[in-house]
Picture 1: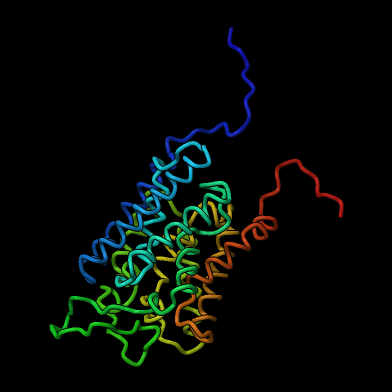
Picture 2: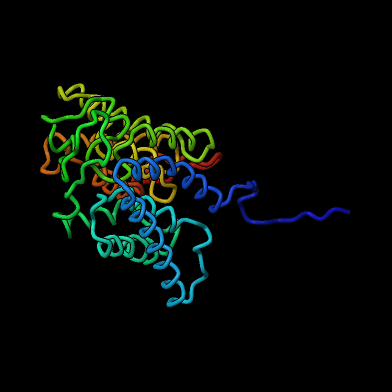
Length: 310
């Protein structure tokens, strides 16, 4: 005789684990890491690896001090470190990268309860903290160590968004052969990684498509170069890898669409009218803060429930 078991939800189990998802994200980021190393040299790779190591150590030590269960095996700290490293200029001093890694893991993630409990994307928030604290170093862009024209490059250069008068060709923008952060310049590598995540079902394509599409539409309406706006700055890495973070983005597809459009609008406003040439990081952080409000108004109504009285 079979027994009726009553258990709390969820009742549908999946072989997917946090570790498996994070491993997919790391695989998707691998082309950007390789591209950044080729474009900016070995120091770029060292910086990314050190950021990942600093994040893992920060989480390990914090869990030991607070006597929490160790979570470094889920690879989320590694993903945060790699994302942070890819969002830094290759010339950034190592100790600043360590400060950013500590802020991402301890301040933004662990202080709020750990993975799934943080209110904002740790890598994005840490990048903003570094920008506000060490603005001189965070905007000291290194020129690529390679050149498609064969001409020697300068020691330092400006990003296309900061200096549109000396904009690289679209082909150079697509391949990432221009000044910028380690992992944000090569649109080809980021697009390849993003497609991998979509095929694997890790991210919903509505977010990157709506984010990038909104920036493209705003650029077209305001008379800016659409392709330059799409291929420059942190739009690609932000749209595919940070605006799709599970913990800090809306649950429903409608919510994700609202979130992505909001990111695109704020990014465009900051780029076109703000004092910063780039607005992706600020836009994602602002929309992260608004996620509870978005979820409140677009969450699906459970079947059979009645509307609450005002």
